[in-house]
Amino acid sequence: MTTHVQSSHLHTVYLKPGEFYIGEKPAKVVTVLGSCVSVTLFNKRLRIGAICHATLPVCRKKKGCRKYCDDTFKYTDCAIKFMLKKFRDYGIAEDEIEIKIFGGADTLASMQENTIGTMNVRTALETIRGKNLHIVAADVGDSFGRKLIFHTETGDVFLKRLPNLRQNQGIRGVTFKKRGA
Image (tube, rainbow, N blue to C red; front, side):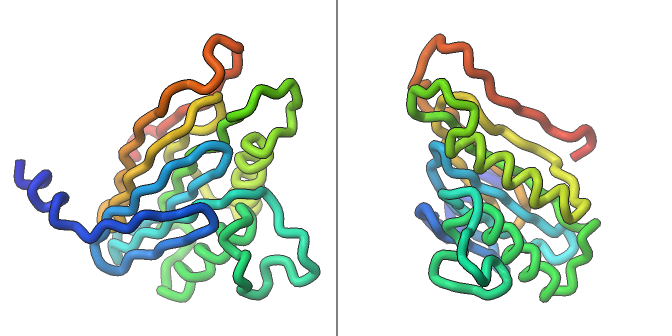
């Protein structure tokens, strides 16, 4: 009961597509995903959490992710790299980061394998694994949207699956949580 009362007094941030939030102070970040992905980073030692709401898989600009620009958080690869850099700036070692990934639904009826949702998830996984980092939880793919509530001070993510957009089409998502996480 106490946790619920404290949670209701948290500063609430509504994260829109193409945005990023890092919380040095406790906050509740709410976002809704379709084909977009959200990646959360959390550090227990400093109790800092970050989340992005990326809309497209890869930045195709010449400078890529090496330099911050207005579109940085639109792209899955750039958003993750930026968040990891911010964590390094705080002195957080890579083995101290808990990573979770959500979204990447195939929200439109398509027989293609390379939908935006699928490509967003693939890019997130490749970017994270390319840095030898480990994902502790994920809920990705399928054909339904997701509403997330991310608590920056604990790293907890509360997920609500939204009504399925393509019922009974045989498209399956992937959900997992690492044991002990």
